[in-house]
Image 1 (cartoon, one colour):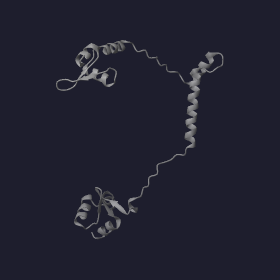
Image 2: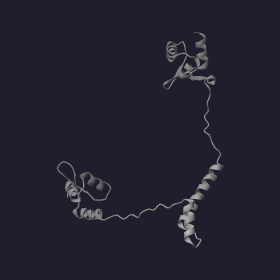
Image 3: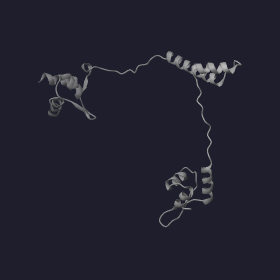
Image 4: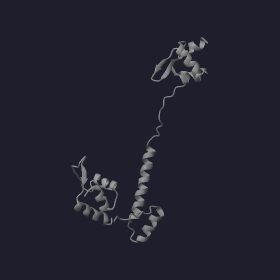
Length: 174
C-alpha cells in the first residue's frame, strides 16, 4: 500500500502515517519510483497495527492519599489492631522528610553571594558612564574630548576606559 491508501485504511492523516513510521510503530519499505523513492506499507502489518490501535488501553487509576495528621490518626483508629496503615506510613514518611530537610538547612550557614563592589571614587579605570557621573559632564563632551585627543582613553572591546589621573588632568585644564 502507498501512503495515501495506508492512511485511508487506518482512518488517519498522511502526516500521522509518517509519524507512526518515524516512531517505528509501523514498518515502511522505500521502493524505487520514477523520480524518487516511494514508501510502501505491508497490508498485514497495517491490519495488525489497526487491531492494536482498536484495543482499549487499561491504565490503573491513581488515588491520592490523604497525608494530613488528622487523616493518619483516623486511619490508625479505624484499623483497630494498632498497626501502621499505609496512610499513616505515608504521613510519617512525609513528616520525617520535612524534619530532615529542616535539619540540613539549619546546619548549613547562610552564604550570601560575595560581590566585590568598589565605589567610583576608588576606581583607577573608569567607563564613560562612570566618568560622566563623577564629573557631571555629558557623555558627548567626554567623547568629543577623546576624539580630539584632549582626554586620553583606551577602547577595550566596544567601550572606552579612562584612567582616573587622565580624567583629573582634563578637568583641571577646563
